[in-house]
Length: 248
Image 1: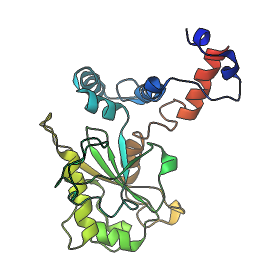
Image 2: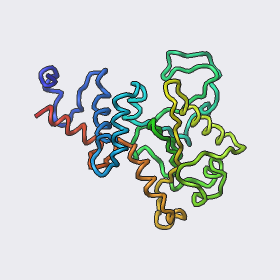
Image 3: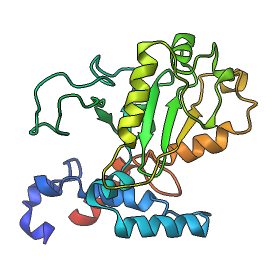
Image 4: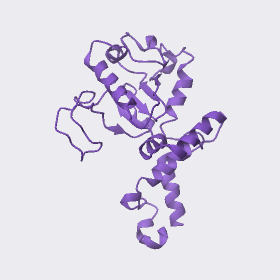
């Protein structure tokens, strides 16, 4: 049907995949679903896979989409009003709607490792847990403002909560985390896991000897569904394959 309805001239090898507006995100969701723990290949504990399948079958639409395609927030480059109560008039037509007094969330970015800077700070929400990802080249000032320690080697990785520090940036991040945890349609509490990303020179990084770093990093990065992983292909490669199958 697609080949019949789309003009053949739009299906050349160098042309982009032509999709109508209301279906434009469908390939991304299908590709991301193949990376979900419910369907991904490799060794996955049976109880984890069963829990994911149950969630796919029962989650409300907004949480279902967020479970398939996790939301990634860049915290180190967020606007000044993010993490603070919205002071304007109620705006129900914005996306997401803004209500006076509610915490403003940052704009989300692509769920891809290419979107992550080695010096950045990110919050990843997959509706099952939260990951606070800090790049391995983060400057000491960022580490100190967020965690209250002088170096990444002193940061406690794994399941944790941010300390309450007397600085605005720490307060904003805690406000954002608490806002993401809110929800009238759920009684679950999203645990926070602190993850340290790779450094430019990983072999000499002071935290490299920590045995918890790599498993946490792999677990966290599995949420970056636009990348290769679990024997799959990257999203751009998937679109290319889809276009070739349609045009042939």
